[in-house]
Image 1 (cartoon, rainbow, N blue to C red):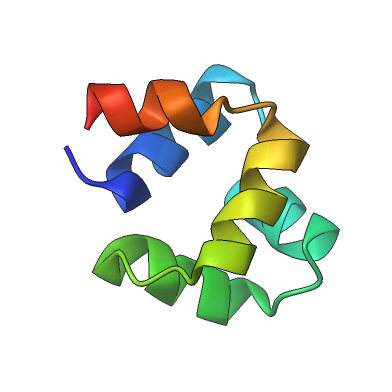
Image 2: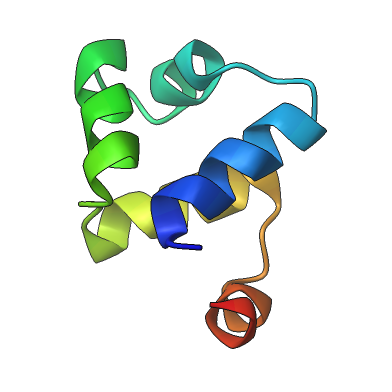
Length: 64
């Protein structure tokens, strides 16, 4: 599993949508979807996503 897949799964588990997350981090939904599918998030983007979805980045690091 890569980071993009992990984020997708977490979004689904929380009953959210990728559009909702994209809006919260002020990113175009198409850009967000591309970054998820290509696993190409910058560190600052991951931090924003982690805050919004309440993801512990240390736990994420251990699981991947």
